[in-house]
Every structure is written in C-alpha cells, then in structure tokens.
Length: 264
Image (cartoon, rainbow, N blue to C red; front, top):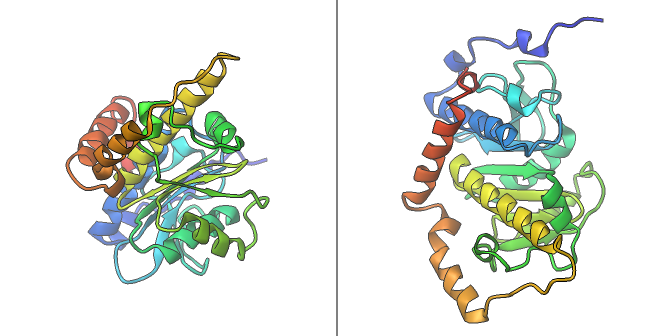
C-alpha cells in the first residue's frame, strides 16, 4: 500500500493560473478551514466550507474530499461550477457530493452570499435535534433572534431535489440549522460567515451547558430586551462595518502563531 500523501500531487502553480481576486478568496477560505480545525469543529474529513469565486462564472471553491481541515491550503481547494462540473482539482480527490448539493443550492439561489460554512459539531447537532431549536438564553443566542431558519432532516444530502426545499427554508436569512444534522452560516464574505459561525457555535455550547444542569429553570429575557438586542445586532447580521474585519484580523493573528502554510 502506498503511503504517499495526496498533498504531494498538488500543483504548485495554482497561484499563477488564477486571478489575484480568486487567490485572496482561496487564502481566506483555507484560513477558515484551519481555524475550524484549531477550534475542534471538525468531523474528520466530512463537512465543508465554500466560497464563491469572484468573476462572471458561477464557480465556487470547496475542500477536496479526503483531506483533513488542517491539511487545506489555498492551492488544494477544488473549483467547481454550479452544475457540479469540476473546473480545477489539484489533488485529484474530487469533492464530497453531499457538500456539492448543499453549497450549490445556496450559491445558485443567493448571489448576495459569498461564503457558506457547514459543521457537524456535538453541541450544534444537539441543538438541531431539540424541538425548540436555539433558545434565547444567552447574549450569543439572542443576537440570532429572528435570524435563524430551520431545515428538516431528509437523510444524507445526495438528492438534488432537496436543494429547492433547503433554499425555500433558508429564505432571506443567512443562518440555517439543519435538523438532526448540524449548523450552517453564510455571509457576504468568508470573514462574515465565519464570525456568524463562531457565535452560533458558542450559543449552542452555552445552551447545552445550561441544560446539562438538570432540572433547573432557565431565564428567558423579556421580549423588549430581545428586540433591543436584535436592533443592536443589525451590523452583525449584514456584515457591514469594521466589526467583521476586527474579528477576522484577531483570528488570523491567533492562527498564525502556529500555522502559516494555509497560504501555500
């Protein structure tokens, strides 16, 4: 049996054959994968993050199927079109078809969203399996009030016709809890989608921790406070303003203390 890593087959001239704008997105998306690995949000080689390729073509970038999140680099991301045709696959590993189904649905229907991130974390799935979903019991979760959509579980996402129902359930929102499955956030940039995902993951962590206390009554803030936080979180929702960049820059500093090759 060969022990050669699939990473050894990656072409070293990807940067030379793509636009500067595409390379920038590749670097940011690779950083998002590495950060997810750093925060232990991974499910081995499963789950997927994607980003739209700048330009007139309906292409997006997604991970090669078989690589761990901490192996993702700017160069080994796979470029695929909206119809599922692989445009550029430096490793030759192909992509997770379930990932294609989910991500192509959103990229095809929502041109306003540039990045889509999906996780299978323990607490995220636990919340997705609760009838009431995400509860307004923490500052983190209240910031998502009125902004979370839900999509019922239909099995592993291998059926193309599920895309219509997924998009219908998402509506005009950018945060989706996939019942019995996991979390999904989208954004006007990779940075925006990641900020939303980090906050949503934290909200789920808090909810599961609070519920683990047993038969203890949870405090739900009054409606007027929830409404106030909804207004305060408007910039967070839209991705506008300096907050997203400030958050992302801090993440990159944290990542680069131990990891620099994501940019390769």
